[in-house]
View 1: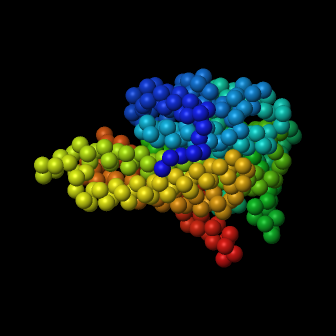
View 2 (view 1 turned 135 degrees about the vertical axis):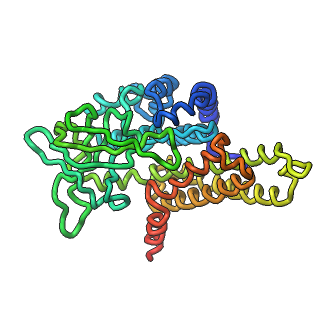
View 3 (view 1 turned 45 degrees about the horizontal axis):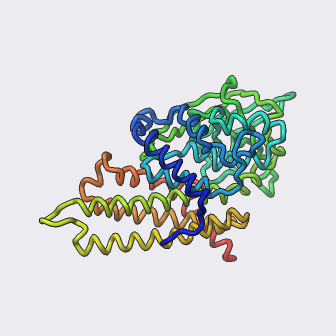
Length: 383
């Protein structure tokens, strides 16, 4: 279906992004997968094109664009080019809103120019080995000692952790209120060069092979008080405020993957010959692709409505949970059907559909599992 949410500026930006990904990133992407992370030069190159700093205010070296739709275009075009850019999405879509909303003017002056230039890369560290969706159970501690916090603990599943220069670490700065476990958490913007800060294992994942996902540990890391983000004890509220965009980001990636899978399957079945004719000529192939195309079209309408609502500041937590839930479940069934149409070749890593299949599985886990999304939606129904 014809999309109506993007204008001329969006499409011009899309053309620039597509050309960059196709000509400068995709040819060398297999080397990223072997290394397990993107090279630092990639972020600088993307910044030179205005991609990284698209939402950073002009006074700090960015383009000052408020609309999230440009970020969505970056995600859509990366998927279309068969590359995954998880660390960049974390940097642009997850971390930046925290800095724009809660950083002081002095902090913005220190961090945002490098952020927009691709020179200061960021990540966010919430998840711990024993606390996934239960953020109130965080055990990493930060004790104030003079003019510094002393940080101790560990984090896992940290996207972008290998290349990060600053990491937003969620830590417990005080004991929780007995009636509310969510209190006592704060966000520290930690310099990764600090003594006691250590990047542990690069985790070996099922998919997203070029996405550096690490373990982090903190052993008496001293974090200056001026690197506290926002107010002490308010981290849970801050995290909750940014969850709609985080989940929308995942939904954009999920829809893009499903749409790309349909294109790949259509093209492959049109060329692949079986019993003297193209696979696309069989009725089953036509029916399966028709089902997938309708799923993608329905998803597009749902996603575009969510993107418009988000730009208006009206995307609620339950709405974001609903769009993430539907998109990621749709992604799973569409990519699976499209891989099946590839036959045995769909299981071979040299075919992009295999990468889409492996990468898709985590969409129903990170950013809140499908089960958590159902709980949120059910609660919004008064259940």
